[in-house]
Image 1: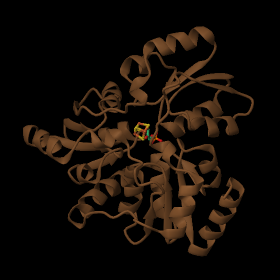
Image 2 (image 1 turned 180 degrees about the horizontal axis):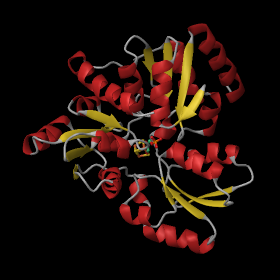
Image 3 (image 1 turned 180 degrees about the vertical axis):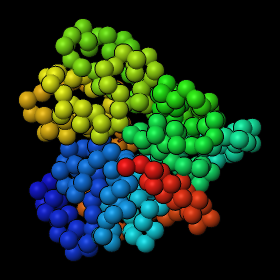
Image 4 (image 1 turned 60 degrees about the horizontal axis):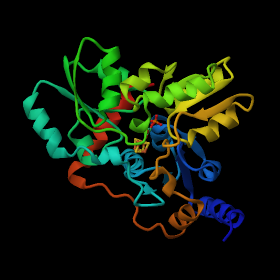
Length: 304
Ligand code: 13P
Ligand code: SF4
């Protein structure tokens, strides 16, 4: 089947089966085009919880599809390519976290949604890149264990001086690959360009940036800005929305390494097959379901 036939078959299946297609900002352009909604982790969480459809096809990585399932236990959630995993989510496991919780028994655990379900179940509350500062701030304890992203943790630390942040050692291999040299080199080429980076970048890169924010904030910043040129320090997929939303502005990547291979595993063909066969829907272990869902519901009750 060519792309045209796939698009029409997906559209038909979607209405026959009452399905919703959600896509993260890092998805391939053709996947973003077929989706009902495209957004960041937080907006997709909210859309999933408010959706009326029976099936959610989640075009993203596993932790995102698991999040949708945790928020919608009664719905079928399909991840079109089951091998699409966020490597950072696998960097910290439940046992590592339990050890740290025993050591710092007074601390609250704030867990980035880029984590596995067991880690969410061990945490007090979840956060995303767009609400991490507010969520940490909202916690009553003076000590926070932040999992799994050490870079997002150190970004939060910069804004919250009243709490001690114990960071675990996870990181995003894609964002952590951007270097200060990349920023200097690209800035030399385009001295007027504004540098917009994700908080998953390392602290030296963040410090050299004009704006730090999650994917949706980066898009909104570019839309609102009077500047014309931007250097982008997050995954390549955001260029699709940036260029569509700001046809009069120019966007360049800070580095060629900013491609998340797992985010690129979802294709039109895999969406079609997922909807057709409904094979291997996301399942959550019953023993941890309630605790993991609770950490997400707590986040959603705080964040606007
Ligand atoms: P956002 O929540 O900012 O979209 O980021 C998700 C992600 O995986 C970043 O690498
Ligand atoms: Fe995970 Fe990084 Fe890919 Fe985001 S870009 S899904 S944090 S590996």
